[in-house]
Image 1 (spheres, rainbow, N blue to C red):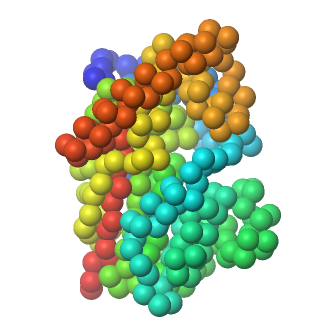
Image 2 (cartoon, one colour):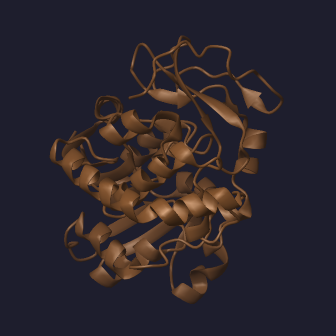
Length: 324
């Protein structure tokens, strides 16, 4: 389980970092939780917890000028190289069949895999991504409408029946402003689907600083069910359905966490799978090859049991815009 030791002062202020108030409620106080290491840069970052609203977040964090430096081009890797079609089908199933003409906005649409699957299912789709993302050069060839994140504010009020964020919300610097914008964009009774890593579940509590999905500093926010619920409800978005199991993330992420306990380079196996330079040693590779299968078996059993108790590796919530 995560240690609750006094970690104050472990991560010193350095150029490019900023001290912040709680992004969830504005509280100036915080309690240290853990110190994680960026698996790409190897820089250390402290995760703290707000004593008022309970949100966990990176503090100090990279400022606006330096945050992009922690998203190198190789960060995007080659996503979903195996079972892509099946995994996207599971995602689209979460929303059910769309009504004729129903519109969906996917925030952080990546390479467009999910919105392409939604389009095939009958949704009218719009994606949103960073201006430098590869999808911006591919959108015309794919026949997709994709806007930049900065252009979201110019989209019309009440213009979408559903908005989705798949492992995006933990990256944002101002979650409250983003939820307000979603409330504006949703039709009356429109739905918002958010999936994030579950910091409050068994995976996060067991993994602590070695947890694969801690991924500091890119994951600026770390949620449990209570903090995410309170944040949604405060912005007029009422949770209707919860799930904590992800075939896409749970077993693999947990197996990688086990390997992080023994390998010197964090996320060595994951970096290799998605085609990034691993930076690991020969010993890391030998340990990974020897242990990945038994680690995967144990992780699979653990993930299923955890989800049975609502303690799986993700939080997936569908919230509905409260009727006025």
